[in-house]
Image 1 (cartoon, rainbow, N blue to C red):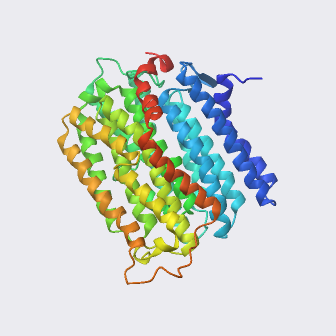
Image 2 (cartoon, rainbow, N blue to C red):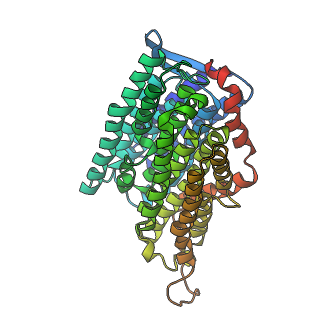
Image 3 (cartoon, rainbow, N blue to C red):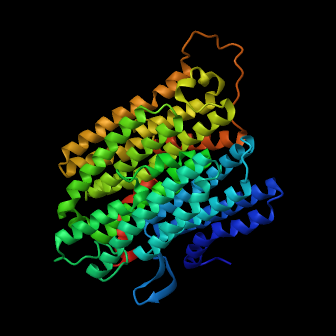
Length: 496
């Protein structure tokens, strides 16, 4: 029996939760436990692929769980931007699960059952964020995502992990309660609705000062986007195991943040209003400063995961900037960069974890000659670096191109310069790592070097994501078509 699209939408949100009892039941049989995680991941990806086909065929897919008061409830609706996020998250959850099996076992991590349970819980939150039809629903699942990832951040149970977890939870919850929730309540009082609507929810005669203040609350309140000065939770969370870092940086948390910013810009304010608000220019400059400063900080980090963390802060600034440009090219660039950065950065984190497991190294200064011992891993790191930099033959080329076009369309020449300078800084802090790995500090013979790569599941995962970075350069068309259809199908999905 073929399931309806409405049923598949709801199953996509709850399916990861079904993995939790299965993981608990099979906790004493690791192979069966991990098979349950992978099986549920495959089912989720199958559901999302079917929903994608429905969206591309023009289907209007929505569902309502509960209505608390008229106009306020838990509702879901699919539009192309949410579909893009769900595709990336569901696929990379599956890939990260495979990677985590090799990493967690070879690294002898404790509490693996708890790890995989909360891993699944977090992805359910991601699906809720991706398919939320209004701000109220999005806020609920946004907070679910924060709370479900806290045990992953503090997984090691050390004092350092607990301290990092406190920073993580403190910043994300405080920004949500003080700014994000206040922005949502203000939107309700000013616009009378929280439902995502094509062209925005505010009336044409809305006071631009009030609307501008609400925009500031949203940008600061969506702490997962890591805009400065609310970015410190991201480096602090690097105390987590590498699969969690991959989840934070590529699959779930930060992508939920920038996805929410794009949704707010498109479906709460609308590009026309966004372009004339007095606070938009201030926030654009703040995003540009975030891009540059975090790149400079990344250059000073010797710890590989710390360098990658500050790199992520910079890359998220790109996406926030593109959304605030209030141009179609900016939105396209931002949306595509969600995907391009996801595959590039998850590759880099997979490689960082592989290096830790196989070579027991975490500092860049210790990686001389490592490329001859781990050629597959360091080649994948090189490919992921090129994608983050945004040069051929990797997919990051296209998203950065549209972001640059967006700055030109809106005559934001300072921001165009910031993008170009930051790309040069990307080269400065990423490419020396594979260069150092393949060019030893001292002369040494490559003969007799024992090749020791990471466990096979981890190696397969990082090889696959590196390959996709290359594929997205030669075949970005499906991604581009999905992103551009945001403008043509938004009214059908959300109304006007």
